[in-house]
Length: 344
Image (cartoon, rainbow, N blue to C red):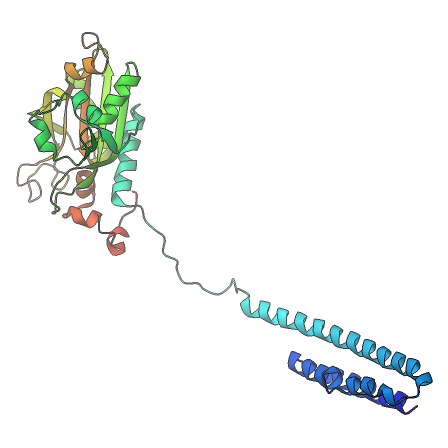
């Protein structure tokens, strides 16, 4: 009876203490007091050797019942404490959607990307397809099919990066034109945007890596007038209706006749200013009629078909369009500079 009374007292005190516990530390302390190595219930179990043999089964059963009852109560309290702590954690981490938030900066498109998208929009609206090609190119496509054979003086002007004797980093996007003429039959109407490479020193107007967009039209009865009309339409859609083109005689191996193409100064609109050095014109691109030799090398009958081609530097257009005076700013990745640009 003495053990039964002890168990009743231990259970009542434990239940009373459980009702007061409100944290994990208090619960752990109670478990240790009852069931630790020197806990009250542990010591009772160890004292069973002093009980007569015939009374031990009943005493063991009573101890086990108290241990089971208290364990169930403590486990239930443990679950409630965990649930309450989880609720507090969720409350601490909850987002108040009514609070004002800091503005998250949104990235802007690079000026080169903006200009390229604008130009592609102009040319695709005129029926041009967009074609791309590899930046690491064979000499055959980069030079020879463009009427620039080995030892031709024009190769010196290209300042080429050679990977192997017959493999180069393309110096223009013209190889895409050659590849297209070799695989398509006229009529052909394409533009070829892309990155190109030349061994230039870095300064305000030059870079060893820059971007071009070239255009090619091949068909029956294609004339220089078609070329001028196309470039006039391009200039007016990009810079305004008061902008026109002026052709000056030039030389390119892959076109004959060839021309340097000027645009009405977009800064002064032809009146003369510092940007155009008082002339009212700005040199922008090169163009001309496709050399018959190029057509023949690409398997196109030059007696039946003619064509025109043009090439423009995207950096040049971006600098004109956005009033940028130093090309190096386009490659430095300065967020303060790039954040100024948006697509109009």
